[in-house]
Image 1 (cartoon, rainbow, N blue to C red):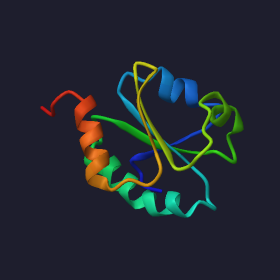
Image 2 (tube, helix red, strand yellow):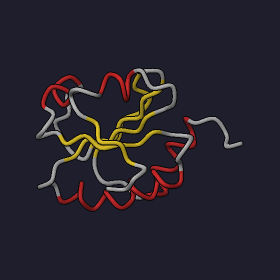
Image 3 (cartoon, rainbow, N blue to C red):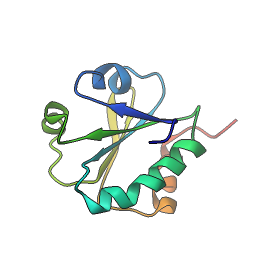
Length: 112
């Protein structure tokens, strides 16, 4: 995993995501999910492109059932963008990078 990606877990989700001062993009995924694996390089690129503007990480749904259940993640990959602990946007399924960037840009303040 890219150095810019955070590994979210049931135990760190509240601190890393809900109490984060910066917006957070969470990729809910599993190792057996082919669309999830196809999305991983795109998520890594976005994490590199948006470092210092957006916290990005992955949460393995098989290893973190509490968070998966809390957010009713029934299909993966699911991407949820949080800001101030609140869900701003949710996307289900594989999406191309350009579509994800448009979504992120619509919710972030302009780059300085």
